[in-house]
Amino acid sequence: MKKIAFLILCVVNIAANAQTIFQAQEVDKAATPQGGIPLLQEYVKANLQVPFATRVAGIKGRMFLSGVVEPDGSVSELKIVKGLQPQADKEALRVVGLYRAWQPALKDGNPVRQAFNYSVVFPDNPITNYDSTSHSLVDYFNDKFQYTQEPKEYHFRRLIPVDNNGVVTADVVFEEFKKKEWKPYMSATYSKKPMMYKIYDGSKVDSLAAYSISARDQDWNSYVPEMIFQTNGQLLSVTEYKKGLEKANYSHYYSNGSLKETMMVDGSNFREIHWYDNGQIAEIIQIEPKNQIIATTVRTIALWSKTGQQYVKEGNGWAIKQEGEATSQGRLVNGKKEGRWVSKLADSTLYIDELYSDGVLSKGTVYDKGDVRTYTEAEKNPEFIGGFPALGQFLTQNIRYPKEAYRKKVSGKVYLTFVVCEDGSLCNYEVLKGIGSGCDEEALRVVKEMSGKWQPGVQRGKKVRVKYNLPVTFMLN
Image 1 (cartoon, one colour):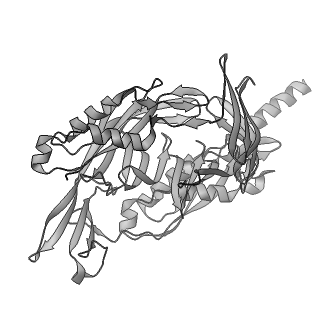
Image 2 (cartoon, rainbow, N blue to C red):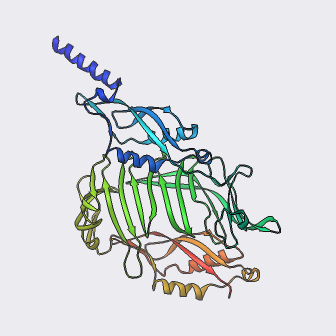
Image 3 (cartoon, one colour):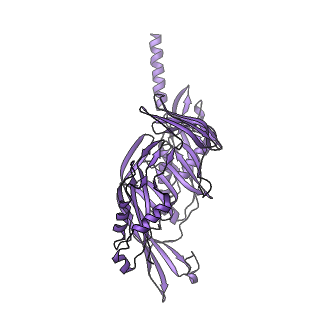
């Protein structure tokens, strides 16, 4: 009877601990973010989307909240202790609530619920060009199209109509100051298109109903970041462009709104940061663009497990990465692969075996469901037979300037996309951005004539389908 009573008492105690909210000083080991407080702070800083109303009002500062770290590493019962502004407070609760990478508190060897306090800082990043009368962001430029805040220099102005969240809602309009009044000069066309958006999570791919918003001129220059939202308004992607299709910065999000990856300009290089879906930082990558002599170099600067264990620091360490259905591992030296790298499937079956020297692949073998392939290049992009010079020559010799375009003096670039299939043929043609007057149809006709004249893309010794973007230029002599 004593043993039964003791067991019942233990069960009662465990159940009580599962419901009790402990303070940090009441547990044997307090709850802490995986990898430490700095990684949580980095997550909050990267994920915080400062509300448009907060920036327009010029509000900055620190707000305080409280909550409970659950035994599974998630948080609950979040509430404001000292707020800053309703929109800002709501955003802080959203971001902290998405972070599920806590090491839970321990008491008597068991994970328990623990109360915590946290503060979120909203930076000094005001919006000073919002005109509430026209609901637009208004910027002024001099006669050389240089930004200016001097009224006596105003020659051009740009109006970006936005909603209460700061998202563009109509054409971006440029006006010129002539004869003491503002007159239309040019515009960038607003577009809102339905689409299916794919989110890749390891070997799992989800397709979500979404819509994209952009504003581009006739040369396809972008004047606002291109944004993709779920149909419920949840942000999925933000991309800034330099010119045409050249990306400058981007951010992609998981379906729950947590940041998945970002790419930012870092001097002459680019820096990518990836996160797991629980908010734990996963990887920092530096991309050093190629020039005519040196090929693009990709370096892994830091790498963590989903549980916060850091494998690679300052480019050096033994890396373990989940890549699709396989787990790959090997040594990194100065951010580049060195020596033998192997990938194994979940059942420990060898999938890929590769040898590297200073980041350059010397030999690789893939064991793909009974198909064994060897290779010396991990990836090879599709290429028009003869390369870019031959591609340019083909376009020059085959394009016939449309009569209507010639008559109307229409010129510019038609942007197309298509898929290069495994046999070098083309399919899935689409005009991304046209200039009209028959040029779109002519560009599409000529591109279709290229079918069969391509070397297909290759991935680890296997020919694969690759999507390809191509601008076709129409220029009057």
